[in-house]
Length: 214
Image (cartoon, rainbow, N blue to C red; front, side, top):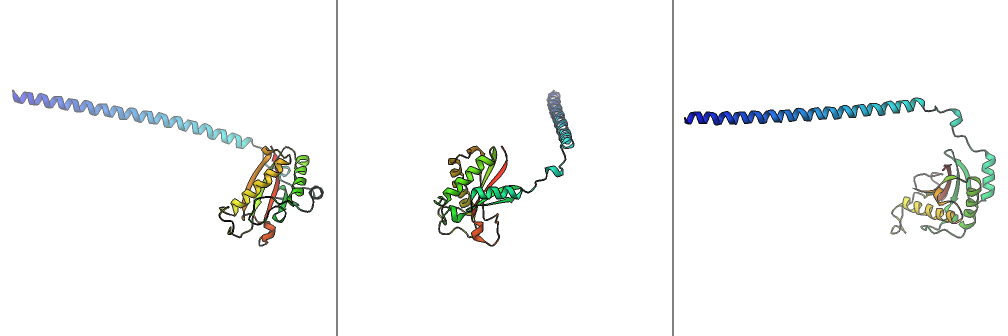
């Protein structure tokens, strides 16, 4: 009798374990099927995105000689130079009109406050930007020489920081002179974009670069 009871108990335990294992196996199969369906959905979506990118690349216009930037006419450079005056230098760099104002006109050493001598040249620059390049983006770029910050290191973290703050000072002046604030972007290059390598005085400058239409 005891043996039969023990056998029945073992049979029940074995049946329960088998049922539990079967349930777990079925759950695993269900999870696997869910993952396969999800992966198939992701694969279909990625294939669709790839087909769309291929379509766009195929239909995109190919570059032609007409789209290649051409140098600005020397007559335009000369006209702008005449309007702005001798305290700034108009040039054509990287496919864009650039108006460079040396720091001897704009800032004292280690300062971000504009000097009085900058008033007229910035007034001329603002007038040209408003009349000749209305509706365009303007990049106000600050540049320094390679000398590390020393005397004013408590005010500026780096040459890039100094150049950025000087660019912002020029930008604020141009805004006060009527250049739309929404058209202005300020950039601080520090010493990393020299116009004349090895010539520190020439590299300390702010450039006003005429960009594309807004």
